[in-house]
Each structure stands twice: as C-alpha cells, then as structure tokens.
Length: 221
Image (cartoon, rainbow, N blue to C red; front, side, top):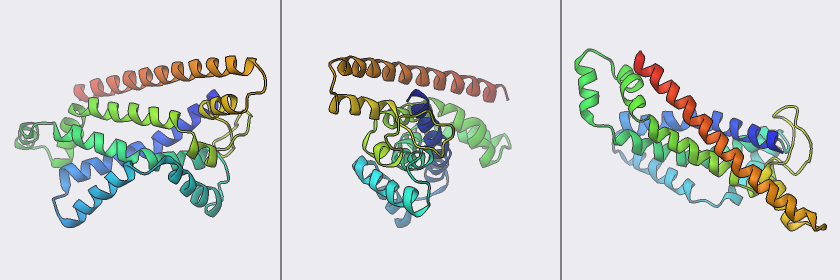
C-alpha cells in the first residue's frame, strides 16, 4: 500500500508538473488578455472547484474503459494529474507574477533571449512558489479517496508495475474505518494514518531538497 501510494504520487506529479509549469509560463509570459485567454483562466478556476468524485467518474470512463487501462495506477495517475493541474497552474502563475519586471529587463538588456530569461532568471526566482504548488499537489493526491477508489481500485497486492491495480494508504484507511469487523482494525487504522503522515513529510522533505539543489545548480550556471 505504501508502494502503491508512492507510485500514484510519482505518476501524477510527472504528468501534471511539466504541463502545469509550461501552462503557467504561457499565461504569464506570453499570453495577453484576449477573450480566449480570459476564458481559459475561467476554465482553470472552474476545474479547481469541481468535486473529486466527478474526476473519478471521468477517469473511470475515459482512462479505465475507453483507453483500456482498466483499474490501474496509470489510470489513477492520469485522473489525479488532471485534478491537480489547476493548483499547479495557479500557484506557479502567481509565483511568476511576483518576480519584478526589472529582473526580466536586466536579463534582456544583457543580450539574453526571452526563453533564456525565463529559464535562467524567472524560473529560479519563482522556484519557492513552484515547490509550494508541488507540495500542495502531493498532499491532495495522497489525501484523495473517491477518484483513487474508482480508477486505481481496492486490490490488496504489491503492484509490479504502474499498469496494475492496487490500494493506496488512504483507501486502506477508509476500508479499515468503514469495514472494521475486529477490535484491532481500529488500531491498524490509526497506525495507517501515522504512516500516511510520515510518508507525506518524507515526500515533502525530499521535494524541497531536490528543488534546492536544482536551484543552486541553475544559479551556478
């Protein structure tokens, strides 16, 4: 169940993070304020407010049945990546907006292209906000139950690949608290909750360490 949870987090973040960052860069650095862009921003904000069960039903229909993934980690990863995209886009965009225009102007005046300015000046400066979006996204992925139950499944096994079904810690905790038939099941549920909290702390710490080293390496360049 720990392995399944880690798989779901990694797959979701690997899909949503590049798309979310590139979308935020486009909205903040390249797009204007046309009606299409305003409609796109409205759509992103609307997606952030949709109940998670709707994402679960969408993932069950599209990824599990139409695309033929079945109940699997990859289907759950795609579903959860769509669910956390608005969080990553909005948080990253606000972080990019907080960077002073003088940074961009100084880089451009030294002969850097706009792409180089974004890559080596804007993004490193906005990295704390991007890390915040990743941590928020990880927390939501780990804490969700309805879309995971519909797309990943309830199978209690060790997944050998992301194309197999499994049971995350959140679903296991839900199962123990709702289907408990033995007195010790509640003790196991509390232990599962403790493991879940520890796992979140470990993942967030590792994320900060990796991004800190990445920011240092980019700064050296």
